[in-house]
Length: 119
Image (cartoon, rainbow, N blue to C red; front, side, top):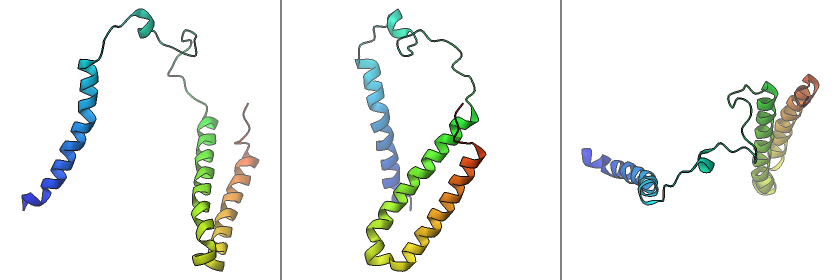
């Protein structure tokens, strides 16, 4: 019974080796000549200033989530547009209209709440 799981074990072992061996090879075979210039933090050509762990404004994450949402909308609309004529027909058009309606209502809500205003 355990021989049925051998391909899975082999897959896991090969996957781990393919991930770990190049890292170890680079670590042990590559040159390691640290100097102060290489070890210094780099931030756009300037020395680092401020705390790297400062809190971001919530609006940053809100804009990022809205970007992902509208990006997924386009990813959903492309297959819909390709198959609209042949397979989906009027039902597909109605489903996409409902989807875009909900998306538009959400966008208007976010716009009225001021989520897209950056100060």
